[in-house]
Length: 258
Image (tube, rainbow, N blue to C red):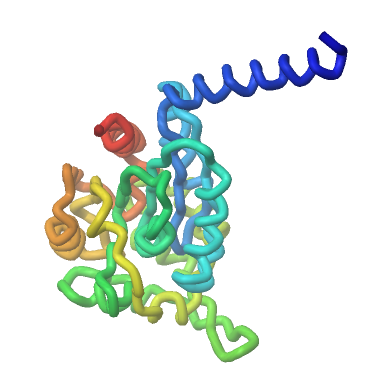
């Protein structure tokens, strides 16, 4: 056998071994953060998932608009050769609902204190569908953007109580400074696809959520015929920070589901 043929044979053997390993491997978990947060909000969840042998990717969510952001997340999904469990927090739920549409490797969706809009619905619609959200009066003066849109932030002094009431105050204050804004256009963008109608879903949320009314999330989970719903007493909107074990456990249940 020539040297060139030997190198090619070794490469093919290595590829075959890698492919066989990938075929039996656990799904990749793709985490999509929501508005007023960033990928670090998943740190506790990532620690548990990686400890349990999962490959995890925290996708950067641009927070510019549902279709735009879904396209960005879809590029991440497309780069992963095996099955994917797609997880979204808050506004990220609307993003994963769109990003998973037609993605053959997405096996399930996990909504973490999240939105799952029907076609024609916006996250602003769903926030106001049930009483309980105290978010609107805590928003800061909108920041003007080129083209007429505006960036929305939560006022820093109101952020801990509004967004992260069950997180240590020092950490919540740091989160307030580092929060990433959502455009008002993104909040008002109507959903055009609903992948939760064709993919199994799992839900977890806090019963003390002040951003999205818990009644709204319960209603959305029932509408989506969720496989499992976990409502955590006393938990805030950032349930993945305050209760990472509960969130990771639910994600692993979605990953293990056949």
